[in-house]
Image (cartoon, rainbow, N blue to C red; front, side, top):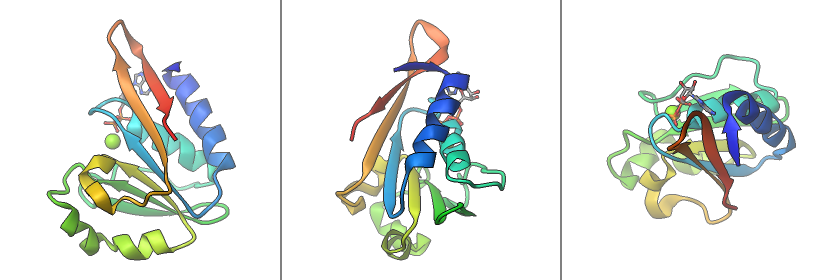
Length: 136
Ligand SMILES: Nc1ncnc2c1ncn2[C@@H]1O[C@H](COP(=O)(O)OP(=O)(O)O)[C@@H](O)[C@H]1O
Ligand SMILES: [Mg+2]
């Protein structure tokens, strides 16, 4: 799907409203592809009322959703999967929570096999739209 920012927000809110914990959702794509924008929309759909900001430095932020905790991870600065333990990775994956992960490829084999995967990409011919794919 090629979506404008408004369309992406609407899609993300509906996607979040339908998400039931426990759930892991990965969001892959280049810098500026819209991962954080989509996470913010998904969080609105999950009933998060706090501002959702990029966890680039903290790597993980926790929010209160209407039905479960929500974790937002940005693994861009992760140097190796063995650094995940310090983030409380095993604990948060073991919770009945929704876990939203940007730069999931940095986690390598540590990613759980049962996950939903979204990818976002710039459109070469349209700066206002992003290509969104629901991979699984
Ligand atoms: N269709 C679109 N969907 C999402 N973001 C868009 C779109 N068009 C333009 N943008 C802009 O692209 C940027 C995406 O940034 P961000 O969501 O932080 O990306 P990422 O987290 O993937 O690095 C924002 O500045 C946003 O306003
Ligand atoms: Mg981001």
